[in-house]
Amino acid sequence: MSKEGVQSDKADELSPEAAPEAQIDGKSVPEQDQDDKKNKNPAENQAAADGSAGTPQTPEEKIAELEAKLAETHDHLLRKAAEFENFRKRMNQEKQNAIEYANQNLLLDIIPIIDDFERAIQAGETGLQTNNTDYTGFLDGIKMIEKRLASQLESKWGLKRFISAGEVFDPNLHEALMMEKSPNVSEAVVQEELMKGYMLKDRVIRAAKVKVIMPEANS
Image (cartoon, rainbow, N blue to C red; front, side, top):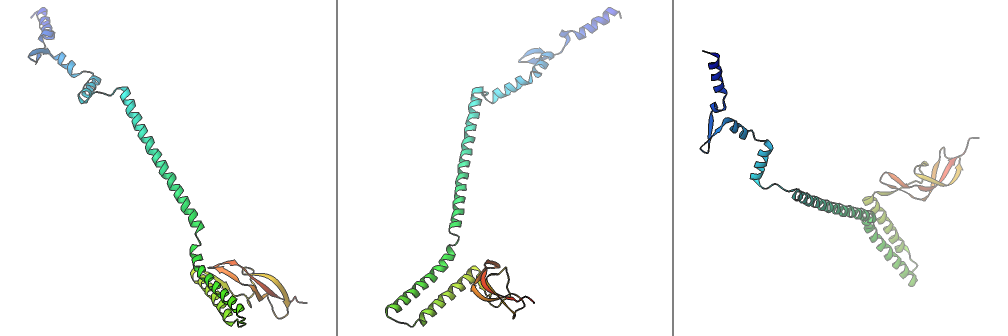
């Protein structure tokens, strides 16, 4: 076979007319056209998909939507801030009330004792008006009131008195207001209790005011 015949056959193979054709809507379309349709720009494909799902938002519509969301968020934050401020004020008020009325229960326990004192005073005034010089009943009533008050404070509130007379002087418990020396003691001793001391549970809240006897110095 001649060279011209071989080249002619190859040209026929490469010729566009020799390429297979596809049928689209009853018409023949070269394969290259089909590939072009399949390889369409992805952005155009996405736009087509978006168009099929609905009309895309304009910039103005997008801005309006964002402004509405921002306004909603701002309103939500304002409500939360107002709720927190109300909560803070309520807690401060409750704290203030707790401070102001912390001793309410204690005072309710003392009020009946005050009533007893008032009755005792009225009884004493009646005795004076009738020239009744027998104060035994009046004194017994006062002692009963004092005992009731001390018992109430100790049993319910932990306030108790401690005895100091005859005890070794302790600066943690006693405050010496008077002092004298004696050869009969070898260490400082409380001779007399001028004012009783009080403890609240295990803490001294008022030291006893006392007279102390001190040992004489060795000559």
